[in-house]
Length: 75
Image (cartoon, rainbow, N blue to C red):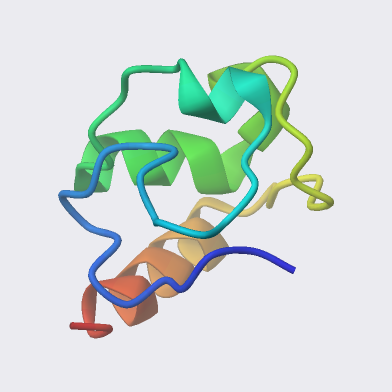
């Protein structure tokens, strides 16, 4: 449903060729650092208002940390 997460850490939002991003993600101007990703995983709609991501976020800080740790391995 989304672009590949391989190499997502350090990537600019809306930058994977061939994926149709929402205007919100295309123009967010964010670099997906671990801190930005942590906030995005916790609440995607708050971090990038108007994005189309069909994911409501995670309430548990430890769950966010676990997902982020996994995403960091995707290189």
